Every structure is written in structure tokens, then in C-alpha cells.
Length: 293
Image (cartoon, rainbow, N blue to C red; front, side):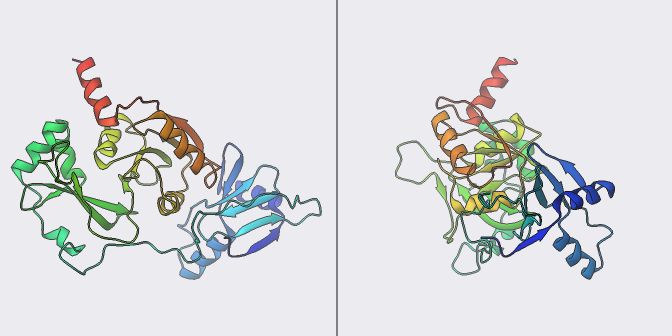
């Protein structure tokens, strides 16, 4: 839920921000700098360098919301439509905290930095999937355990929060698991961050995300580690304030289900579906290489 509601002349404020160059026009909204955020950074002494446009105001100037502190802004005139629906997070953002792998047990967060970053058997396994992974693994900071299995680090806004191990010897139908995921209360998505990029592609698994980084180099891959997106993952996605979201699940019907769920909480973004009848991004990438031979 929003922390508070502020009434103000939204039209006048948008015009002021536009005159100061702190303005961007969106499909249904105007993105401007939030006055609350501006005040906080002024108190910190870095207001001159702060340029984030986290306040999105509807083009009828009746409603706005800051996606940083979740304050709702409403028009101060008497014709405000009280039926306007406030966009809320699927989780309570006032109490939301980022879940980070801890230091208890064997597979701790700090253990990741003790793992090898140059395991030839592990690198050859990655290259056997997609030959470009031979170079990509170092960019993504992938490490390897004592069995040469790739250990994929998860970052959120440049912070290491988790990792996942891929069993390189996994065979479909085997009793051995394909992945090992250290215990954590809320398993995060796998995100290949692209700075301040606002275009995302949502997919299923870690290797799907790696393939998407090649297939869609202008987008930030966001893998939900399954066939659905959780409320926790939506809350993390909202933190990036995405503007354009392409959904590429292994099945088109699943993509539409994810789209319908996301539109409830990120209704300011543009959505598109990459159709698929069981072909995942990695398989599509391999096929595109063959077609271009």
C-alpha cells in the first residue's frame, strides 16, 4: 500500500519539471522527479546530480505515484475522480526487504567468492550448450564447484544476493536434480542487468536468460525460475520501473498468464509476447545459428 497521499497541483508541477529538464513523456503518463525524492537528496547534499524520474503522473493530471517511496499524489482540484484505482504491489512494500542468502550452513553467500573462475571442464560444458557461453561466462562472473558444475551468481542492482548450481551431468529422467538452489525464504529471479535499461525480457530459467541476452541485446533478461512469476519477483521487477516488457516463456499460453498477472501491478508498461510452442530461448538461439550458416 502507499505510505501516504499528497494533494497538489499536478499540472503545474509537471510544467515546472518540464521547464527544468526533469521530464519524460510516456504512453499514458508523464515521468518527472518526485518532490519527496528531491528533498531527501537535497538533505544528503547530492541534489545537483540526482536526475531520477520516479514520479509518474497520469496525462489527465488527476493521479500520480512515486515508485521509489510509493507515495500517491492526487490533484488538489475539486473534480478529482475518487474511483481512480491506485496501483499497488502484490506484497506490502512498506515492509518489503530484499532476501539475501545468509552465512549459515555450507552453501553461504561468501562461499561463492571461494569458487574457481577458470575451470576448463566447466567452461567446455557451457560452450557445448552455446559456443558463445565460452566468453559470456566470465562477463556474468560464473564460477565452478569442485565437480566442475557452473555456479551462476544472482545480482540485484549490482549486489550479489544468491547463486544457483547447474548439474552438468544431468540427464533427463535421472534421479539427480538438474539444479541445486541453496535454501532461502524467497528465491529471487535471475537478472542480467543492463545499467538503467528499462526494456526487459521475461523467461523461465538461467540459461534461457543467457540466450535472451544474445537474442535480445537491447533488453534486460529476467528469469523467473519456473513457469510462473511470484509476487516477490514482481516486487523486484517493479524496482526497476520497466517501460517495455517482452514475455518469452516456453509456451505461449504461459506467457499470456504471466502478462495478465503483471498488468495488475505494472500497468504503465508496454507488453509484448514472443510466441513459442515448447521451444525455449536457448533452443531458438541454436536454431538461429544453424539458419545463418
